[in-house]
Amino acid sequence: MRSRKPMPDADRDAYMNGIKALLNVRPRIGPGDDKEQPRMVRLDKAALNVFENFAQWVEDRQGDGGEFAGLQDFTGKLPGAALRIAALCKVAEVIGSGASLSSLSSSSLRGEIEIVIDRKTIEPVIELCKS
Image (cartoon, rainbow, N blue to C red; front, side):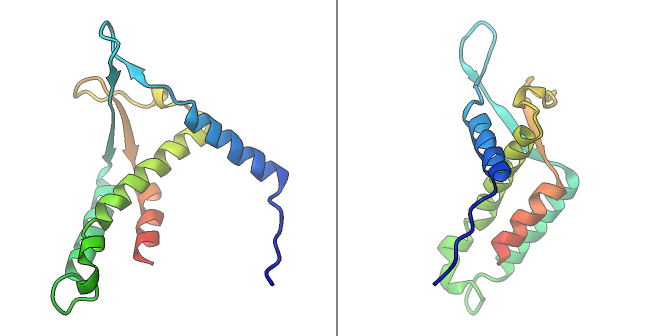
């Protein structure tokens, strides 16, 4: 039988506060039109390189005789899933630091709030996806 250890109160409180902060993220409303505005997510150059290497790693293992030959439907979607997980991790990181999404840099494209995923955020996600 497995033994269960209770989560320390401080850890439980930090987790609950983080979840509440994520649930309280409000949409960014555009001026004058009351429509929700997007928050752009992008990879910095180092994270993009890590992602492209991972996508190629997956691609190299697909096809006839490949390690992922029988899992192509799943593994073909894996790089995109990794990006979505990395974006969620970055948002949680920002919220967990006490910052708000509105404090992130504003992109020059159309004034959207920009979330930049860095190598430090994406590498553990890629390792999880590879395991």
